[in-house]
Length: 161
Image (cartoon, rainbow, N blue to C red; front, top):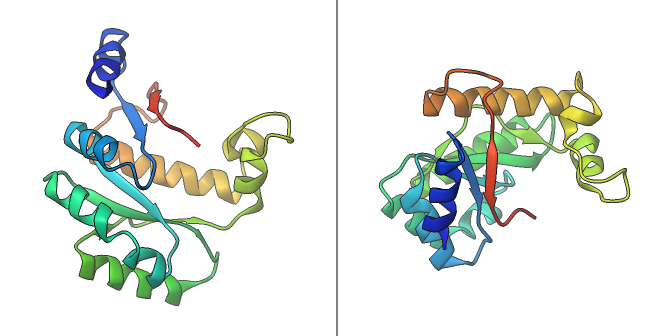
């Protein structure tokens, strides 16, 4: 099914497809990993949360693709938490993105259905800190994938929650 979705996206002119797989859906995650050019695993910057992804670690690392942990929902000023979590991620075998998404109200409000539908933080507060963090992550992803434009058109496929 994923192969068919990717073929349709390519036929429609998509240059980038983002696949979001459920945490414990190993077959789907394996297929996505094999199709990926870059794998990002979002995790809270806590050792317990990182140790809990050992299955994902094996699956992602076995793909032979670049795998990075992107820390999210961590403290805005928790330097030590990010340093310690990066050490654990490295011990497991992951690289860590140079930026992270911190615990910000805009991220919570943006995904809450009661707040005028689903909108992203950049739509709600274009000049806010959450929007800046997302822009930095997007720029990093764009560089990793060698995409040319910051305004690159994105088409999504997969199970977005």
